[in-house]
Figure 1 (cartoon, rainbow, N blue to C red):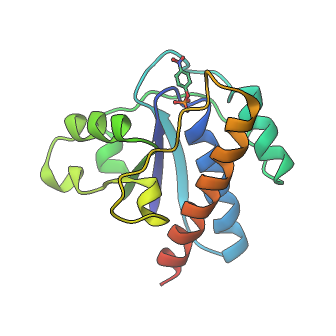
Figure 2 (cartoon, rainbow, N blue to C red):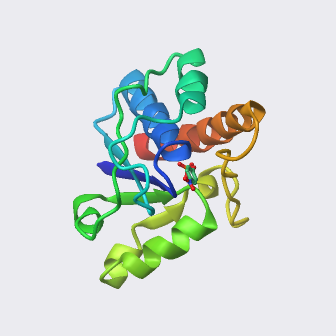
Figure 3 (cartoon, rainbow, N blue to C red):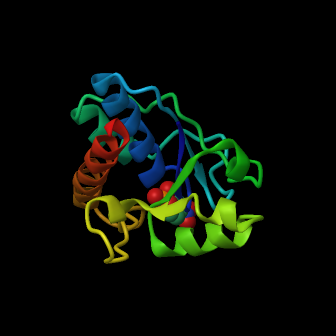
Length: 152
Ligand code: 4NP
Protein backbone atom coordinates (compact mmCIF):
# COMPACT_ATOMS: atom_id res chain seq x y z
CA UNK A 1 0.00 0.00 0.00
CA UNK A 2 1.39 3.39 -1.02
CA UNK A 3 -0.07 6.52 0.57
CA UNK A 4 0.57 10.12 -0.53
CA UNK A 5 -0.14 13.03 1.85
CA UNK A 6 -0.93 16.33 0.11
CA UNK A 7 -1.16 19.96 1.25
CA UNK A 8 -0.44 23.31 -0.38
CA UNK A 9 3.20 23.94 0.49
CA UNK A 10 4.43 20.48 1.61
CA UNK A 11 6.20 22.13 4.55
CA UNK A 12 3.57 22.27 7.33
CA UNK A 13 0.70 19.73 7.26
CA UNK A 14 1.59 16.94 4.83
CA UNK A 15 5.14 16.28 6.16
CA UNK A 16 3.65 15.86 9.65
CA UNK A 17 0.98 13.52 8.24
CA UNK A 18 3.73 11.56 6.48
CA UNK A 19 5.72 11.28 9.72
CA UNK A 20 2.71 10.17 11.77
CA UNK A 21 1.71 7.47 9.28
CA UNK A 22 5.29 6.18 8.98
CA UNK A 23 5.47 5.99 12.77
CA UNK A 24 2.11 4.22 13.21
CA UNK A 25 2.84 1.81 10.34
CA UNK A 26 6.05 0.82 12.09
CA UNK A 27 4.33 0.42 15.47
CA UNK A 28 1.61 -1.81 13.94
CA UNK A 29 3.96 -3.70 11.61
CA UNK A 30 2.11 -2.53 8.50
CA UNK A 31 3.78 -2.58 5.10
CA UNK A 32 2.98 0.97 3.97
CA UNK A 33 5.06 3.33 1.87
CA UNK A 34 4.41 7.00 2.59
CA UNK A 35 5.38 10.20 0.83
CA UNK A 36 4.09 13.79 0.80
CA UNK A 37 3.82 16.56 -1.80
CA UNK A 38 2.47 20.07 -2.26
CA UNK A 39 -0.02 21.26 -4.86
CA UNK A 40 2.15 24.43 -4.97
CA UNK A 41 5.84 24.44 -5.91
CA UNK A 42 7.25 27.28 -3.76
CA UNK A 43 8.94 25.04 -1.20
CA UNK A 44 10.42 22.31 -3.40
CA UNK A 45 13.62 20.97 -1.82
CA UNK A 46 12.97 22.65 1.53
CA UNK A 47 12.84 20.98 4.93
CA UNK A 48 9.54 21.10 6.83
CA UNK A 49 8.66 24.35 8.64
CA UNK A 50 10.57 24.45 11.94
CA UNK A 51 7.25 24.57 13.85
CA UNK A 52 6.12 21.33 12.17
CA UNK A 53 9.47 19.72 12.96
CA UNK A 54 9.07 20.80 16.57
CA UNK A 55 5.55 19.46 17.12
CA UNK A 56 6.49 16.17 15.44
CA UNK A 57 9.66 15.85 17.53
CA UNK A 58 7.79 16.52 20.77
CA UNK A 59 5.60 13.54 19.83
CA UNK A 60 8.59 11.30 19.12
CA UNK A 61 8.63 11.70 15.33
CA UNK A 62 11.63 13.03 13.38
CA UNK A 63 10.63 14.68 10.09
CA UNK A 64 13.79 16.79 9.71
CA UNK A 65 15.11 14.84 6.72
CA UNK A 66 11.95 15.27 4.58
CA UNK A 67 12.15 17.68 1.63
CA UNK A 68 9.43 19.49 -0.27
CA UNK A 69 8.20 17.98 -3.52
CA UNK A 70 5.62 19.20 -6.04
CA UNK A 71 2.74 16.88 -6.98
CA UNK A 72 3.05 15.25 -10.42
CA UNK A 73 0.71 13.40 -12.77
CA UNK A 74 2.77 10.25 -12.16
CA UNK A 75 1.80 10.32 -8.47
CA UNK A 76 -1.73 9.32 -9.42
CA UNK A 77 -0.56 6.02 -10.90
CA UNK A 78 2.23 5.44 -8.37
CA UNK A 79 0.11 5.77 -5.21
CA UNK A 80 -2.93 3.77 -4.05
CA UNK A 81 -4.35 6.41 -1.72
CA UNK A 82 -3.95 10.19 -2.05
CA UNK A 83 -4.99 12.13 1.06
CA UNK A 84 -5.79 15.85 0.84
CA UNK A 85 -5.39 18.00 3.95
CA UNK A 86 -8.17 20.41 2.93
CA UNK A 87 -10.93 20.97 0.40
CA UNK A 88 -8.80 23.26 -1.79
CA UNK A 89 -6.10 20.55 -2.06
CA UNK A 90 -8.86 18.01 -2.78
CA UNK A 91 -10.29 20.05 -5.67
CA UNK A 92 -6.82 20.72 -7.13
CA UNK A 93 -6.03 16.99 -7.00
CA UNK A 94 -9.28 16.03 -8.74
CA UNK A 95 -8.40 18.44 -11.57
CA UNK A 96 -4.92 16.90 -11.94
CA UNK A 97 -6.13 13.29 -12.04
CA UNK A 98 -6.27 11.82 -15.54
CA UNK A 99 -9.04 9.23 -15.08
CA UNK A 100 -12.02 8.53 -12.81
CA UNK A 101 -10.00 5.66 -11.29
CA UNK A 102 -7.25 8.14 -10.37
CA UNK A 103 -9.83 10.56 -8.96
CA UNK A 104 -11.22 7.76 -6.80
CA UNK A 105 -7.85 7.51 -5.02
CA UNK A 106 -8.24 11.06 -3.68
CA UNK A 107 -9.83 11.49 -0.23
CA UNK A 108 -10.02 14.16 2.46
CA UNK A 109 -7.86 12.98 5.37
CA UNK A 110 -10.29 14.14 8.08
CA UNK A 111 -13.03 11.95 6.56
CA UNK A 112 -11.36 9.07 8.45
CA UNK A 113 -12.10 10.70 11.81
CA UNK A 114 -15.13 12.83 10.89
CA UNK A 115 -16.97 11.11 8.01
CA UNK A 116 -19.20 13.12 5.65
CA UNK A 117 -18.33 16.50 7.16
CA UNK A 118 -15.80 17.63 4.54
CA UNK A 119 -13.56 19.11 7.25
CA UNK A 120 -10.22 20.86 6.57
CA UNK A 121 -7.01 20.52 8.51
CA UNK A 122 -6.58 24.30 8.92
CA UNK A 123 -3.42 25.67 7.31
CA UNK A 124 -1.23 26.72 10.29
CA UNK A 125 1.43 28.52 8.19
CA UNK A 126 0.36 32.11 8.84
CA UNK A 127 -0.85 31.52 12.41
CA UNK A 128 0.68 30.96 15.85
CA UNK A 129 2.41 27.87 17.23
CA UNK A 130 -0.80 26.65 18.87
CA UNK A 131 -2.15 26.02 15.37
CA UNK A 132 0.59 23.44 14.90
CA UNK A 133 -0.45 21.64 18.10
CA UNK A 134 -4.09 21.43 17.02
CA UNK A 135 -2.97 20.34 13.54
CA UNK A 136 -1.03 17.46 15.11
CA UNK A 137 -4.03 16.34 17.19
CA UNK A 138 -6.34 16.32 14.14
CA UNK A 139 -3.85 14.44 11.97
CA UNK A 140 -3.11 11.92 14.71
CA UNK A 141 -6.83 11.18 15.16
CA UNK A 142 -7.45 10.73 11.44
CA UNK A 143 -4.34 8.63 10.83
CA UNK A 144 -5.14 6.38 13.80
CA UNK A 145 -8.49 5.60 12.11
CA UNK A 146 -6.79 5.10 8.76
CA UNK A 147 -4.36 2.61 10.30
CA UNK A 148 -7.23 0.72 11.97
CA UNK A 149 -8.92 0.49 8.56
CA UNK A 150 -5.75 -0.69 6.83
CA UNK A 151 -5.16 -3.32 9.51
CA UNK A 152 -8.58 -4.70 8.54
P1 4NP B 1 1.16 23.69 4.14
O1 4NP B 1 1.26 25.21 4.63
O2 4NP B 1 0.28 23.69 2.92
O3 4NP B 1 0.53 23.00 5.29
O4 4NP B 1 2.58 23.25 3.86
C1 4NP B 1 1.66 26.24 3.77
C2 4NP B 1 3.00 26.54 3.65
C3 4NP B 1 3.40 27.58 2.85
C4 4NP B 1 2.47 28.31 2.16
C5 4NP B 1 1.12 28.01 2.27
C6 4NP B 1 0.73 26.96 3.08
N1 4NP B 1 2.87 29.40 1.36
O5 4NP B 1 1.98 30.12 0.84
O6 4NP B 1 4.06 29.61 1.18
